[in-house]
Length: 145
Image (cartoon, rainbow, N blue to C red; front, side, top):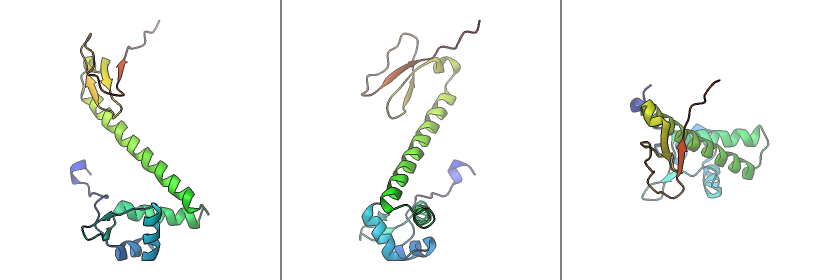
């Protein structure tokens, strides 16, 4: 399925009763997990909780880690944080790769990249725009003997 036709699994569409049913938990458990910061749904203007399909998956993962693996809630929270970080880094890497793929071979030889993963092609002798945390990368192909 192309990116344009994917269903957004982050869209907050499920009320707490439906989320509880889909995750196999009691609504009070979902409220407790929200208070602990394990799975924090979005809020409506009236402060009602709205869960996404991704939130439901996280709830199921929390239940699995707790019941099958015996991991405490603090450990589960750290695992979820690390999974989110890996996911964000993977998305950033994919964006960088897409940018590099769209460059010509000459543009790929010298470029700058900032801490956000923003890539700018440079001409030989050109300096990158000064941004905090930026780095200049010069790629030279290895010469085989």
